[in-house]
Length: 458
Image (cartoon, rainbow, N blue to C red; front, side):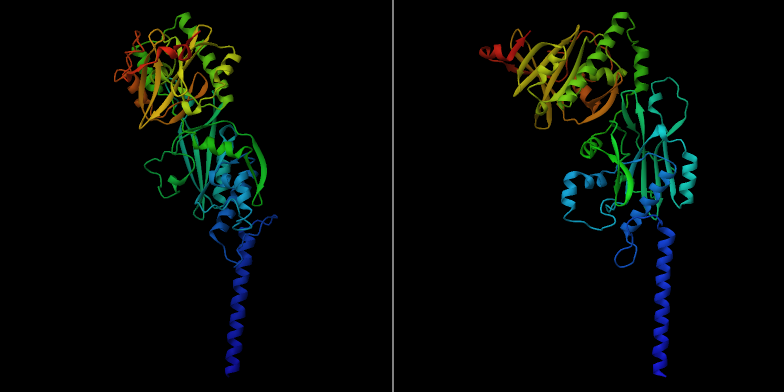
């Protein structure tokens, strides 16, 4: 009898083991593509969180390829692993053979798509739901229509979130703007949106609008899956970190221009044309040198107040952090056909450059750190008097002016208030740079013995 019981027990165990094995085989055949690819079961034979993540990404990419959507990988965590430096480190610390890069341990992954190529939205979404994905589409107003007096009210897709087994795929839609760059919108949740649908605070995109250059893409294989990635990964990651974009305040600008109509005289129109040409040239020169700059003083005020140029200002103002100064800036502008009008100060103190293009002056102000403040200098050529203009610390964001992607202080209102006071929204045609700014301070005098070197007028 004991022998019979042992036989029964062994038989039951064999049957149970066989059933469990058959279940694993069924799961593998049902949820894993029959196409060649990496083995997705862990060494223990059980699905891990990384298995689910890789499986979800694989199913999503297969669906995208079916609809010929040219998505590219825009996830900063994955791209960091794929960067050349990380690859060398990665060779020494591979975590899982089948999912070494895509399985980052994060609960979401980001892809991007040129919105012009999003033409099969309804059929793609239906197919995704049939595959088991839960969907959340975030839409918003088209900023390219914001300058119009009346909007059609039609919204455009900004983000698409797909969730499967608790893992989220984020698709960011990139829109072409007139400044020859790509724009993506913020991710704003409506009151009725399920806040638990995705880890919104952990997503790479959506905290704010962003601007990116068009990346050159290459098709490669990552963890056995065909996927497009930026050719220059390091540049893309750096650009994404500093992509914050500020839209021009079109509604406020329209209100301002109703009170103070823009000058439409031939001279003013010609001035705006010259400013656009000079600003584009400045951007090309400084971008080639790798020197970041931003709109400053009256040029920044014109963008912030009226989404344009102050026609009576007669110049273009830009700012550069002194740590980004390069000794070949002057020669680069001269080689581009601009004449050096004056050079005041020195790299260590109150440096200022001024160039002339036709009859429009370009002023380049260099900014210095001083505790919690930033300041740029000014010099009166005839007396050697020094001035400084003090600003609260600021970071830089992208915007668009005159069909150019260009930087401005993110804290624009604080920046403008510091320079122009609380009445910045009222035009002032009579302006004395030594006394009119709210943030101007006397800063001593240059020693007369150094004037020849520090006060150069051409």
